Image (cartoon, rainbow, N blue to C red):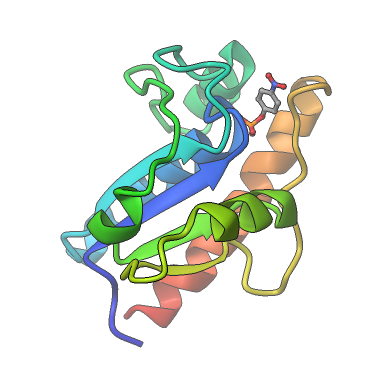
Length: 149
Ligand code: 4NP
């Protein structure tokens, strides 16, 4: 499968799952030289301009991912023309994106995990939920990058 030129990851708040996925895919794709642009956004605007959740920054750092420079933003209709692929972290995110999607939008919209499993929202959990979230994200990112080789 041809790699896309740009990928947008979308969750609810853009402070836990999607910035983590953005960081993991940016780092793990580096040595493949694909030249892909990555970004992330939330379907909600609760956390606009905020840094990722401190637990995501901490656990990410321990695994070698730097989330500290990322800032939250809400997804917009324009994103459906700007990005080749938009990846929703769970079914609710996908449903909300389908409602926002312009009929002539050019982005391909799909679930982040092609097996159909949601990336569990760790926001109301503890650090171990963030560890599990990163493990799930790394597994999916590795599978997607294999498919783009
Ligand atoms: P995320 O997690 O969608 O993975 O960023 C959440 C962040 C914030 C909230 C819910 C989920 N919240 O309700 O504020």
